[in-house]
Length: 599
Image (cartoon, rainbow, N blue to C red; front, top):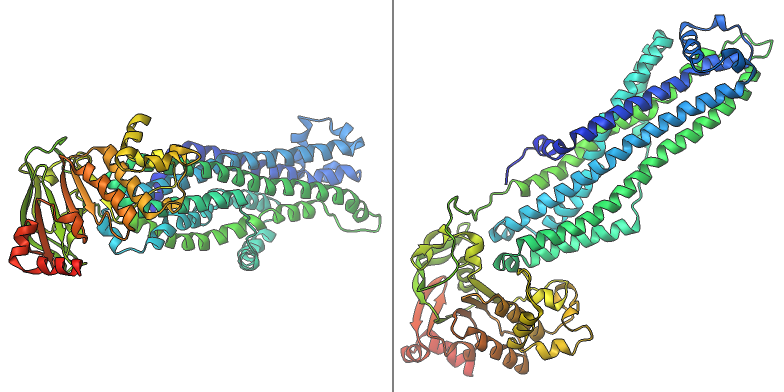
C-alpha cells in the first residue's frame, strides 16, 4: 500500500470529489451574493418606507434602485412597502437555499471521505503481519480505526469545510462594508479578529449524535475488535474479501446515517437565520418609523445597512478562527492513523510468485531460526515431514511450538533459513495459494457473530448445504446443530460464547474438514476439555487426519503417542525426536513428560 504524508493522504481522499467541491464553492458564492443583495435593500427600503427623496440616496442605494427598477415598478413599490419586504425575503430565501445546497453537496463528501479512511485502515489491518500486533495494544488499533476517524471527521474535515467557505464569505462582506464606509471598515478590520477570538474561546459546540448513529458506530468498533481477534483464522482461510465486504457493508450503513445527520444539522443554521432575518425586517419597519420622527436629525439608512452587513461576518470570522485549533487537534488523530497506514508490510509476495495447489512429497524445515526483535525463539531447526505423516510437537510452554506452526503458512517469515514444500521455498509461492494448503484447528477457537453455517463455510465461496452438513457430521457436531431451533441458521453470538468449549472446537474442526486442505495444523486442539468433549473432538480429529499430513501440538499423551514422529522442543531447539517407543527407550525428556502424564 502506498505511503502518505498528512497533506498527501487528505489530498488523495478528496481528489475524487473535486467536482463536488467546485459545486460547493459555486453555491457559496451565490449564497453570499444574495445575502449581500438582501441587506443592501435596507437603505432604499427605509427611504421608500418613509417617503424620502430617492435622489438623496447614496451611490450604492441608487445602484440598488436602478437594479430593482429592472424587476419592479418603483413608483408602485413606493405605495406598497409590502412589495419590497417580499423581495427582501425572497433574496434571503435564495441565500439560505444556496447555503443548504452547498451543505447538501458537502455532506456526502465528508461522509464518503470518512468511510474511505476507515476502509483503507481496515484493509491495512488485514494485510499487516501478525508480528505488527505483538507490539501494539489492540485497544489502540481499535480506537484508531473508529474513534480517531470520528475525531478527524469533526475536526479536520470540519476545518477544511470552513477553510473552503468562510474566507470567501468574509471577503465578500468586507468588500461591501468598504464600499459603504472605508473608515469604519478599517476599524472593523482591527476589531473583528479580536472579537472573533473572544467569541470562539467562550462558545461551545452543541453537536448531538443520534442514538442510531452511536449504535452503528459501536457495531463498527465491535467488528474491528472481532477481526483482530480472528486475524489468524482470516489469514489461514484466505477470507480477506469476505471480511472486507462484511466491514464495508456495516460501514456503508453507518455512512448513510451520518449523511442524513449532516444534512439535518446543516439545515438548522440557514433555516434559523432566515427566520431571524424575517424578524429583523419586521423590527426595521416599526423601528424605522420611530427614527424618522420630525424631530430626529439622524439619517439611519446606510448605518442600518452597515450594521446588518457587519453582523453577518461575525459567525464566519469566529468559525475561521476556530478552524485552525480544530485542525491542529485533529492532526494528532491523523498522525496515529498514518502510523498504521504507513507501517511496513513485512509479509510480501514476490512479483512473479508461483501458484501452488497441492502437496506431493514433503514439507522441509531448513536451518530455520526466528526472532522477535532481539529475542531468539527458534534456533537452527532441521527436519522434514513426508506427505501423509503425522508429526507431534512436544515441549513446555514457550518452547516455540506455536511459533514454528505459524511460520508454515507465512504468518511470519523466518529470520534465517527457510520452509520449503516439494523443494520450493514457500516465499516463492503466492500467499493465498500457500495458505490454501493448510487447515488450522487451534486451542483458541475463533468463531464469528454469524450463523453456524457461515462459520463452518468461513473463507469459502458458494458452498452447498450438503457439504456443510457432511463436514458437521465428520466433526461430531451435526446432532447438536439439528437440536437447535434454527439449526444451521442459528446465530452463535459474539465469538460463539453461547456454545461450550467442546462445541466451539468441533465447529472449528468442521470448518477445517470442509476446507479439505492437505496439511492440518492442530494447536492444542483438545486442551482444557471434559472427558466427553475430548472424546468427541478426538474422534473427529482422528477422522480428519486420515490420509493427510498433520502437525500436532499437544500435551495429552493420547493425542501424540500414535504419531509417526515426535519432536521434543526446548527453548527453540529440537532436543529429541523419534516414535513414542523410541523416545521411551531413550529415557530422556520425553520419557519424563510421559511419566508426569501418567502420574
